Image 1 (tube, rainbow, N blue to C red):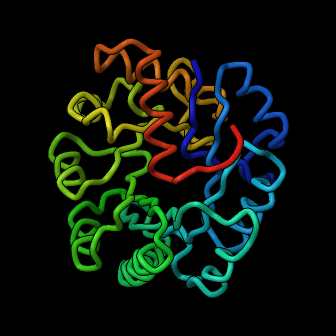
Image 2: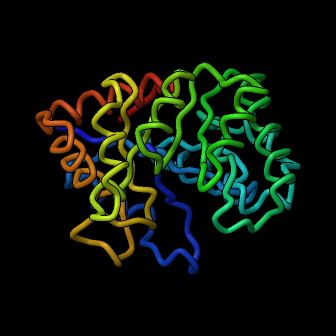
Length: 257
């Protein structure tokens, strides 16, 4: 049984209080996690993600600007897609009205620019949406959802899940599915079609129960997957296999792992 953590942050930095990428990857392998997508949140962070991916045959990178950092714009982002190894997706990008670290109209502009970039480059799009569902869907409809789009760390309920699925998007579930306070999210995990289901850690954030409160790590994507399997009344091995294949298809992976 092999797992794919399709959204984690292996980039280093004291503020993230996380272990070195080599140790994170090695520890995860002991738990059957053998593929990783390390996600960029700023241009500088994306550069580091690409560098990390270049060191491991089973780690891929994305390049994008998070809504928190939208106020800084996306200058230099497009050029990163000529780097080796080339990022396999644009993002994470989107809208976050929970914190609103960047003004909403700037978030919207930068989100739209990255949707356009995903279209231009024919790459997957990784969306972050928090407390901004209506505007997220409106901008996605205005720009046209890329053929391969994922709502990472999906936090909506059945209604939001159906809207995303109507647009042929993937839903990626994190450790939040294990939180007692998330019954509607578990309903969304139940209704998600098998071919649109993904699991992630979003490490070092959002450690699942029973590790809640600790710094998260890719090794625990298996805990998320086991919880999703229980919610869906499916064998854990089946969820591991289908999320592995879905991730491979979404990002068009073609080396290692």
